[in-house]
Image (cartoon, rainbow, N blue to C red; front, side, top):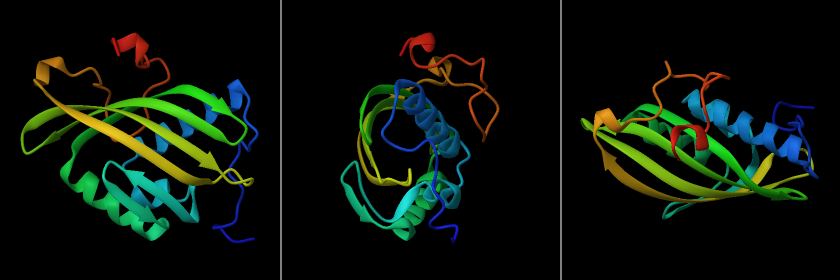
Length: 159
């Protein structure tokens, strides 16, 4: 079995507990700001809609995330489980970043569909960006890296 075929638990069908684990694993991976690490969670032929961009395949995911994190400095992301059923999970998220000196909080929703091996085969994301002052930031842990376990989620920071 190659690295491309290794199952990525938890596997569908999801329970509340396993859906929460999947969401936190995705959040931690994205907070690493490592496009290749993030891409390993997706099937080789995964389909994405990210805002107004439509992608297919891991290589396209790596290219998009490489460009994203080259321009979005001090990226910090928090995801919350919204709903789940069978092999699908919906999340809401917020992230903050600085682009050309301006801070932004980005609000979004994602719908995920998983293959039987636990790799995500479809991701659809809708995102809105709001300019904020540095003093309005909510996500201030040291990064890149995962949100500390004792750092509040979206509800705990007023989201």
